[in-house]
Image (cartoon, helix red, strand yellow):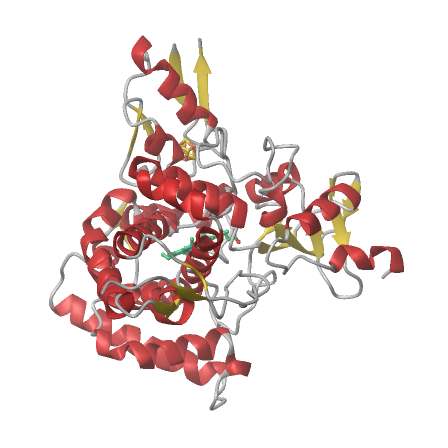
Amino acid sequence: MKVQVLSEVCTGHGRCYMLAPEVFGEDDRGHCQVLAPEVPSEHESQARIGAEACPEQAIEIEE
Amino acid sequence: MAETEAHLLVGVNAPDPKPAYRRRRDECPVLRTGEGGSAVISRYEDVLWALRHPEVFSSDSEAVSIGNERPLIPLQIDPPEHVKYRKLLDPVFSRKRMAILEPQVRRLAAERIEAFADRGVCDFHGELAEPLPSTVFLQLLGLPLERLPYFLELKDGIIRPEASATPVSRETTGRKIYALFEEALDARSAEPGEDLLSWMSEEEVDGRKLTREQILDICYLLLLAGLDTVTASLDCFVAYLAQHPERRRMAIERPEMLDGVIEELLRSETPVVTVLRVLKQDVTLSSVELKAGERVALLLGAADSDERSFDDPERVDFGRRPNRHLAFGGGPHRCLGSHLARMELRAVLEEFHARIPEYELAPGVQLQYSPGIRQVSELPLVWSARA
Ligand code: HEM
Ligand code: SF4
């Protein structure tokens, strides 16, 4: 699984890194930073939970 | 207005506004309330689209006017200028920075709760939800807490001048508020520390810093945007938890769920019910044509209970997934203070429940929710006090 954040769409709600701290981190502005674009399989479900929680739909997942 | 639409105006300020929200979404997703009124938008997809297109739905000073001379930063600034300010302000209000402030906030909350915990009754609104955010704000600005009564008086003078005991003009009150912020800023620049004003003065992006005037303007907006909103959220949350004991016990027994509890209550209560915009271009939403120049209200509460976007929206589900609520707005103007707000809500709920896990509404009370921002101005609670 690959994850990507569309930085021009992200506005820093912080839902993703609250719910999926192993997959998403935050930069100084509180915007999403993908920790590792290739998600290890044990974190895949966390990645989905984080991505679907984003109100801006800024996170793309490629399975 | 057509008589057939009159029933659509009823019930949005009720303790449970959801039936009224539903009628609007189903029968009139873009409701025009007649001469001079705003068009009210209530479906999730429409509201989100509007929030995300500030070039169409602008929040400049034509949309919201509250007696300020200069535009409120960043609310009344449209993109692209807007992002320059958010780049400077976002780091100041980030989750990491708020974590540094959390122990102070907890201590302030605990002190207030200790003051009534043994009494077995309190007015949750008047004794905690209302004063706490202002106490926190003074602390974060580095102002002495003895200034609280003066500060509360000024805040009400700006937000509700008509309700004040000694009517003074907004301009006079505004000047006094600026004077108080000047005092805080002088003290902070003489002795910078780990606080909001010092952070705002230091933050630099691409060689830009905020000017003194801008920092003062921002403090002014924080006072308008960051106090009553937290009060209302605390009122709404605790009113719900007082009336749903089995839900409350679940939240207390499973502390790891608290973030989910807060997000779901933010969604289901949506304490900030509407945000205002003015149209800069013609646009069509839910097949209704809107014209440039029209004023618009986005009904966040209705969006957050839209069954087109949430499964079984009227059910309160602390484990809800996904929960893309718009309680903090969305798009570029998304609430700057959301991480501060979440931290305050978490701190208060934890400190309160640690001391008072079992409580209910005082018998016979009828809760009244204020329009626009859902405060409950009297929220009497009772519990059996420790001997
Ligand atoms: C639970 C409490 C809160 C709720 C429900 C809330 C809600 C909102 C909403 C819905 C907006 C969007 C307004 C719009 O689009 O027109 C907003 C914006 C804003 N909020 Fe909050 N808010 C809360 C707490 C706070 C706090 C504590 C602060 C103070 C730091 C704050 C500061 C702001 C600012 C400055 C904006 C304007 C941001 C911009 O225009 O870029 N809010 N808030
Ligand atoms: S939830 Fe979405 S908008 Fe918020 S920080 Fe994550 S990616 Fe950005």
